[in-house]
Length: 119
Image (cartoon, rainbow, N blue to C red; front, top):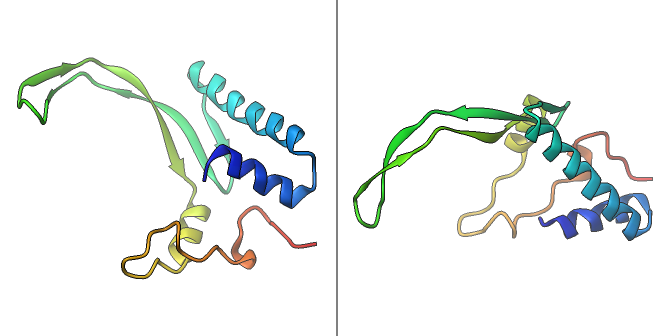
């Protein structure tokens, strides 16, 4: 799913103008980015949390040449899925053999997270 697909889903669910939804989605993502840049932590209950982790310096290997490369220490954004979302995904039917997740049937509304309800 792309950001445009996400905007379309929210427009369909809320009947708000696409332009307004696009601004909201952009603002939401920007708020998460700015919080992470400031070494903050974003927790969305029932969905997951975004954090910054410290990755130590290490020695890696270039797979093409086999040469060793020094990778410096750095801060890395990290997402940890919530237990509720993990359980929803585990309960979903897996794709059939040879089928990609894009071809799998959509999640039924009855198991949609965040109290999504048809009106």
